[in-house]
Length: 591
Image (tube, rainbow, N blue to C red; front, top):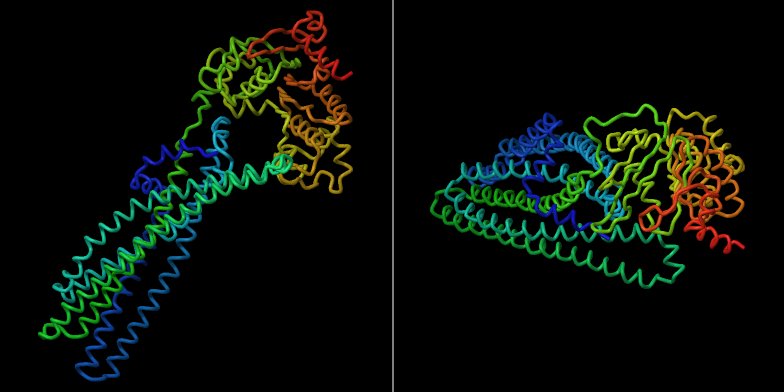
């Protein structure tokens, strides 16, 4: 259910490496970030002036008596500080949000593009929910990191630096006593860092499992209900949901221990100020205003330290998400174009397999020395039992997978020499499970291609007998298509897929079980469409119903990855071999 291999590999990624990779996305905006940091520095310097003014006001009142003009002067300066701080913070927020949304947009685009160009085998290795989690949830966490974490860290460091400088400048002896707590804070933070990172990894992994489970089982809810599996599936979900809940509990527990520990250190620092400051006031070394100012500085010092803890919480979550995102992006496709790959201008559609061996997993050959040749515009059908290698042959032609031995040639060129995009542009595929996107019938046929006119689309639909049912719909070609086309029958979806294929002018057409699970009336329409389409280009057909392939030019009979027989329908019947037996069994079943 969950791709554990990605997580195991990304666990080795260090925080520094992750941070550098994330900062690389911010590099194009470095001037804007510098401007943001300058505003942050000015704002942090201004806000740390407040304790000094409070101390000065206290000394004025306690030493010189109430001097209205001096007090109002301090009030005006404090108001100015508040205006500067809030104005700069507002400007920072606006600029930062614009930058970060551009960065997150780029990251999402890169992940989607990477997945879009990845191998079918890799995409099938994990549930769709796992990939969706990475593209949506994990990138949203990165959004928090860029908007909150980086700015908060820089801003907090500016504040801490300013406060320490002003504390030392105010009373260096008392400041040194207070700063004794800093090494202890560093140790506590380091321990928290390790524990929090581990907790976030577990939480992200468990959340991905829940998302993957939901995506899979909501799609298969009909089967669950048919077989009365609701209770068992609920128990499975409950187990995953419980794991996710307890991973959140663990994360909360870790942070719940860390915060009181930091508060304890704040109390310790405040007691140091009162004790050392109290002794110094009694001996006349400093004024009460200095003690009050120093105590305010301690409060202001621990506020950004606590903020750092908060943002570190988010940072660990972001790193856990970044690990998962880079885990996808660092997994290269196995099916890649050669550097000097060929761009086909046209394709005749001549296909040849030369001693092809192929396996999905080690030591389990699916194809064993398969050799055959299909001439241009010839129609060929592959028949055989389930697992004989029929669908695999069709997948290999479009390089969904690469073979281990032998050669596959198209127009005399090894398909590994042909760029995938140009190879697939000339090959149309019509599969048993027709996939339709949410949108309209028109958008599903044209696939948003601007080169296809409405007349070409309608002519294609008429050619494959789809127009007659589309024309009866309320909105005709603008009829809405719900998720996966579930508002159309299997036959209607198949006819639409035929139109979608031929309107893109393929040189090779692949039909994989295109007539299965179709009613008799629709099958007749599809058979008529197939007969017409055989004249368009090379046609490769996989069909269990032998009645649908009697008129093809050649039939290849497969068994356990090997070719047993080849010939047309009449020739194979005369041989009275494997094909004859298959046909006789089906003929008896039909009568």
